[in-house]
Length: 339
Image 1 (tube, one colour):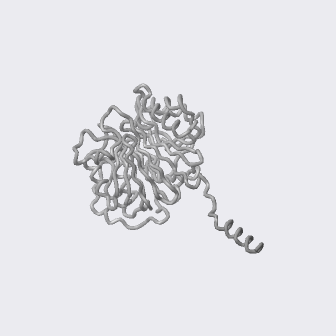
Image 2 (cartoon, helix red, strand yellow):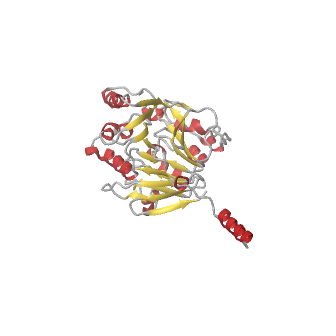
Image 3 (cartoon, one colour):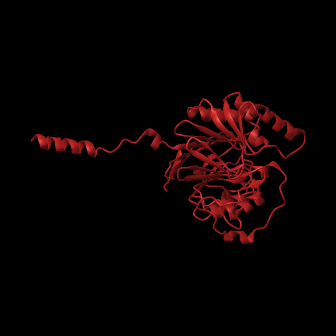
């Protein structure tokens, strides 16, 4: 009898499944914050580290800085560990001074000197640099990467340069390049954008800032140097000087989010280029594009802001296995995408 009891006890103990830590099941949280046609995307790791990409506009009584600070507070953050400034336009870097009044930032990443001249670009850049130089500073270089917790941030473009070698698993010839028509060379900061592939386990997201048409082409033509992705944050807010179909379609994103404003971005050509991408399951928008028509806007349930009176965000909860869930904060519309 004693031997039988011991065997039963041993069987019960060994049949109990191993405990899974809370960190293992908690997702990477991504907040696509409404900054009215600029960019501010906040990544929060399960371990508490954070990455912010761009800071929206200056002015407007601190509107964008307030929205970013509120998102950080909801996420339980007391600081931003890393800020990536994709380029030096007001809708991306202009919010740095007011944001720093609300939330400290430890590390600044950018592409180096500005290429634009004149009083206004100089004021914008110098105002940023004066604050950046009080923290850690990293210059993004294509092919290099940084880590933010378990999030791998690989730079694909910066300062007008691009990666020249295919990422792991990429490099296939891209037949979509055959019909390419270049646009005029872009001398602005847009073409200098820091573009990134953000990987969390098997989950892959692309953010190219405001990189423009010709640069996008060189990332995927004649060979696709990036590969395929799960989530695509539309380039340049869905403006038709970016969003090259040969790039978007070669990436085969499962889901796309457009960080447009009510009256900025979401142009019909760029919208169509994303919507017709092979394998795209869903398309979400931060705003209804007022200058477009209903046929070139997604269904209302997938739009965070249907007019200019609100500031709702779109959030993504990504797991290391590549699955993720997108939620519209306006109506709590939520949809999960399995790997």
